[in-house]
Image (cartoon, rainbow, N blue to C red; front, side, top):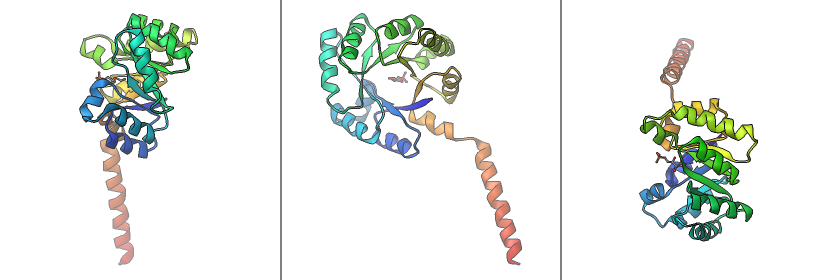
Length: 218
Ligand code: E4P
């Protein structure tokens, strides 16, 4: 299973990249605006830190505009993937861009029907937003499972990126369902490393070791 980091913050990306567990990055207009920098320059910097796919989203709503923006964004770096919203206009853009060899990530996906459409259009990646479904009182775990069932049933080339991840349980459910990728916020990645018994156990080992050293010195 691949881990992407869901942020446009360079420090967060560098920190997780240094641990060797990051395979890609997803950004969106909100995440980029949070950084307050020129978006294209920020994206270029991100592409230099992580070799894997870096998602950058188009703003246009019409197919033509999306395709134009996507072509421009794809010149920033070879690992740029274009995020396209799950609309009729977006789906037309996906088909055009994938035919040109530009990889797309269909975003703002909230239903299994939308997964099926995006897969049929030939998207390289599809991002179901499970946290926002959960916020809405809908079953986000079924969304992950059934997305994978659909992709596997027809051997679609699209990879599922479980997005809008809110907690470490979401990552476990994604892994159990065989999701190709989870895009995980920095704070959730940090929590995934930790367990109170690890710290407690380590302290006990070190203290017992110290006791032995003191005894041997006598
Ligand atoms: C990733 O591709 C999405 O943009 C992101 O996961 C959305 O997360 P949010 O629902 O926390 O904004």
